Image 1 (cartoon, one colour):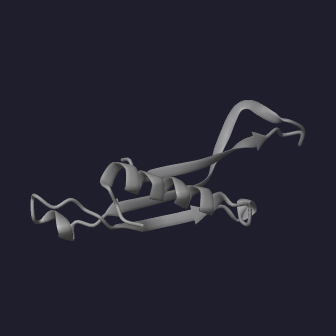
Image 2 (cartoon, one colour; image 1 turned 45 degrees about the vertical axis):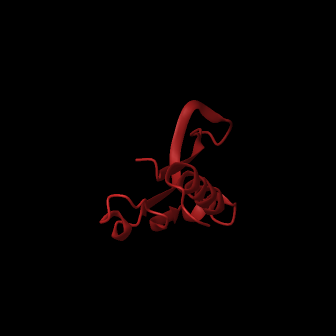
Length: 85
């Protein structure tokens, strides 16, 4: 799926020090899709997309995580599906 993105952050070590090397956890995600209505005509390409789901962990809100996920999604919509902005 080209319209699904995940945000990850390093997991803190048990002692509260530096993050464990290679330990990451999902802190947010976005799922989106292109309109199917315009797909009925085989010559038409979808030009509109919709976000189906967007979530960010409470501990990571107000840190631009959702904005970054949305920007990535919109860029993919434009580059892969010629979506209009």
